[in-house]
Length: 369
Image 1 (cartoon, rainbow, N blue to C red):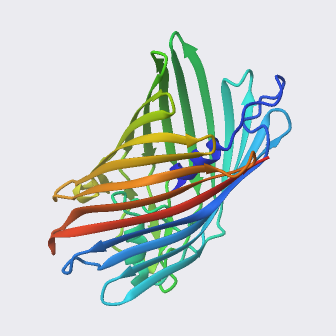
Image 2 (image 1 turned 90 degrees about the horizontal axis):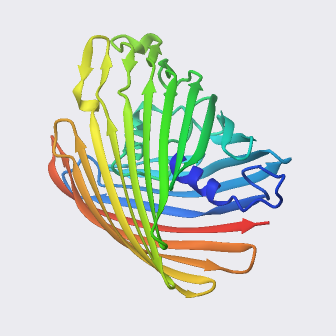
């Protein structure tokens, strides 16, 4: 969720209005809409279905000549069904981020605050909902309603190097402790998160562009306290690597985009014990072909593949197909309507292999001042 809507916020930026203005956003903009995602599973799997609809809101605005601010939040409704239906519904946490451009737009310093506007404590029997939506394989748009107050500081730098544009960014995240369950005294204190990202892109010929990215995240120890924490030792989450690749080529009114990413999480540990079942890898690739049918309307069919590979089981595989419709209503309003259908399978040690069907629908509207 966070990655998706940080990209949306960045997409709202427009060219600088004046040479002396180095703010990331030169005018205020907003994005809102509706997103629906559902997965259905064969009988015998631990759940019958998981579905979520959400209403995202992203606002960005300049603050003077060098600073900008953006805000991201959602209202989300998530339902997991097995023998009964379990529901999470409500406002999510709100992310408020301040960005300051240093020098001639080559460096950007940022501070982001997680405001705990979402619900972060639920009954213990609702844990299946939280674990279902947080699955990296299923990738629900909103993977958590809330947690606790948090602060992230970051610094990014970009520079040209011959035919390449190179970027380096780093951040550190702190999050306060909170009680995840309403009927349990367990207290959870997340560790610090450090993140480093490298990026590069270049033109290929006159019509192509190539992009690479690598993100490394590491974490300090998570701690548990409270009466129910007996038997729960300190937990060290495994480090995570995200590799990204993209290529875009355009000719006439048609463009081809190919992208792939790989998410690898190393095994975590509790004390001296390595927890092998926390290790996983998710690979995703997608290809899109867009055709501009008029100055304000384009159609973009797509196909995607995703492979989930946990440490010691078969994991899962998903094939999906869909179409994006990009449209402009006038000089200020534009939008994207999307529909997807997917089919595949998932493996569970107790249930064996189960077929999966996936459905996704979304509509986003953007206003640009």
